[in-house]
Length: 508
Ligand SMILES: *Cc1c(COP(=O)(O)O)cnc(C)c1O
Image: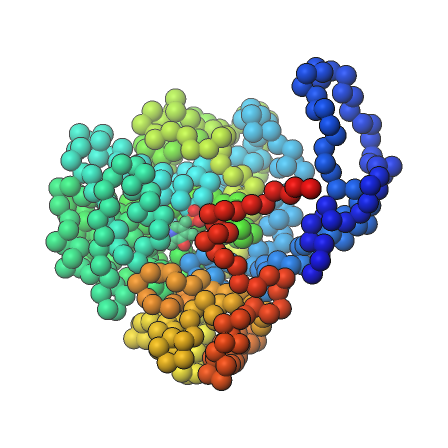
């Protein structure tokens, strides 16, 4: 492929200026000292060249809209077009974040109902929508745990327990908040080692951060004894909700005894999120953490302090957009909630993502959310069973998969030198995005596979077929597989250099 840069196209003087609509802004008000001395180095291409260039670039991407994308722990599901269309209604897009509550009743109603629905789905007592990513939700959650202990004068609780299967953001979050991380091992079944946990808890324990189902793709069976053990020691329980897709409407973190949870709305509740954004890490809390929720929160006029105090038992019916006056919904801030850990984002979080989550939840309803968990789990278990049948090794063959499962290529690596990286790269030639590789760190040569509920049986079967063929190829010619991918614009990149010496500037 040549001419991957738009600067390499076109020729001097070429452009599409005549088609720019509207008047050109005058430079007159800009002081001379602030004006650039040379014109910007813009590509000199025709409109058609520009269109073709960007269309071609977009086709180089693997995306959920073009390819199966079984990225474990990330829930790359289909994002219904209706969510995008409705979230991008001009009334939402043009809404100014500083508009007074009186002029914001429609959007406030949506966000208020989203808070309530998430509360219901998770079994928590209150929800704040402001964190802009899962990792920031974790930050909010652990900050609330710390604020809770401090509010009781309990300053000795400086330790956070984190199972060794955890996502890297868990220990990073605790460390960033000045707490010490203590790692808890996993037993051979993929469960938390309960003896080790019991031995680790004590008066220094601020809390435990747990993902359930874990990133090993199994549901923690002894969640009650774990919760009891931590609570008995005076610690709180943090639920990493990245895997909520597996349990939607089936079990609720609140019922498992968790005190605080983040939800990756961009994973479970549908937002295109490849390439690192945009996201939302809404947080839910139990009764005792309510006062500490980050602000702003949407409340109801006249009940300013009452966020979450009434446990809702179902989804609220859609609110009629209130006629003015009187406004019903309002933003609650530090003045209404003096114990809040404060603000985490400008304004009210990633409202575009929140609206998509709102619409997605409304589209599916209670029944639909149950089906999400059922089909996500069914698809994962089907895929795991098929691959096992074909001779692949599951990391936890004795366990039923949740919404994702782990293959280990330890044996293939020993016998023929086939690694998880090789399989990931060769899968691209077969038209599949690679699953998550080398995470979790506990399993050697692992592929963490999450098919999601939105794939059909044909796609899953084709994926099994591709994996079998790659294994066969490796048996007869391992060097060939190690050269993959062959069909993409670039081959294997030096990942360390790409991360450490990234250079994406264009110079003439
Ligand atoms: C994705 C993920 C996170 C972090 O969420 P971001 O939205 O990417 O910041 C945390 N824990 C687990 C288990 C995850 O899969």
